[in-house]
Length: 84
Image (tube, rainbow, N blue to C red):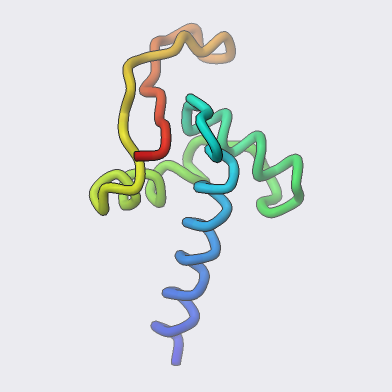
């Protein structure tokens, strides 16, 4: 029973992430988390909240990496994603 709930939760996250990147946006994991927090889907905008699901979507071929963006918050170059 618990395993089924986890699969549903992951699918919700997948849907939220693809909605945030639709139609042709280029966003970092932190930017996606900010979009989800603004919609009250997640309580805090943190990269750690969405990065594992984004990695899974990349492995499934749903997302592509498309270079780097400079993150003003961390002052580092981070991976940018777009829908495949």
